[in-house]
Length: 327
Image 1 (tube, rainbow, N blue to C red):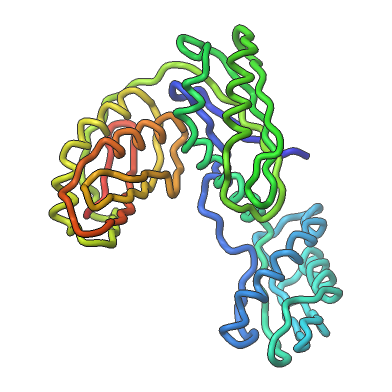
Image 2 (image 1 turned 90 degrees about the horizontal axis):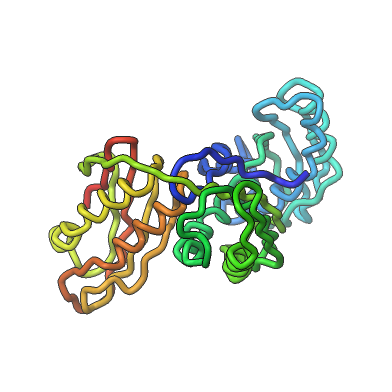
């Protein structure tokens, strides 16, 4: 079954993924106790993630939140014994899959207990990665001919290879007046995207709703949101540069009705200009708001410095207020 991105009708240009897909992906499997040497654990957990994907059949009848399995593993990585810790058929099935599996090799044999999540956080993380890249390309998407004044739904289907290359993309109007040049342009923009590496090849459906948004927020500081920066510009210099951004934030929120959290990454050159701006993480429901925030950030000017400064800046946007991070 092809994964789907459900939408609501918020915002001028909206791609809203399911909550599970937008949420931060937790580790699919962790070592609850025991395990190989610390330097070998990452490789073992990566190999276990591949085994976890084979366990999906175990959750077909009932899906517990997680299962625990105790394993004994030879230095070669061969699982020599797998015993259930939690009760139930799902845990028995997971233990059976582990019992015939081979994990990453280690310096010596080891025992441990795996806690395996039954939800597909890996897929959720991949869909979020694809969505973030759609947000980074939103400006190019809305520049397509025919979108000005358009009201309707465009169904975009894209296939992304594991290495992040988009191998196929189609776009079709499912609600509204058909416009082949517009949909051809949208598909072309998506095909040119370069997505960050995924855990597997993915095909995603992304219906895009076009409509009007509204709402003018208050911009205020949230002490719980902490920006981080590295480079010669200190918090005072960065705050001075951001003074001009408050009006831009208000304008973006007024134009695009959406809520959620987003973290921007800005690379500020020695001349004080923003050399690069990207969405690092986004839970916003409207990718056009992502694009507007990036445009506003690129227009900022900071004090000159002897070398580049990198800033990660978090925002949290509600219906009435834009909360900004402390520098």
